[in-house]
Length: 97
Image (cartoon, rainbow, N blue to C red; front, side, top):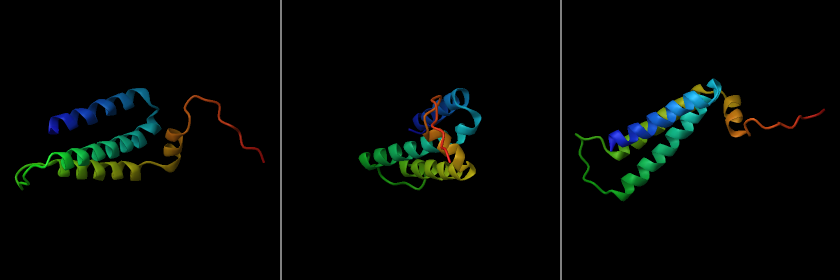
């Protein structure tokens, strides 16, 4: 399971580095990690396995994804998130006085 979530993190992150502008990578990575945390929580709820302090559980992965996603969101700037959420490549309406 750890390998699966590792691949689900690494592949989209590598694509984001190559396809997005540099200032948009951090907000996109933050959103990706929050989505993966949600999937890890859903998988942990559906797979009721015995809790063991020795093993890494899906709850641990969800917490890690959330923590790193929050760190990426804090390190990013608000205008970068606005750029990510607006339409890319389109003509933006100009605001007149």
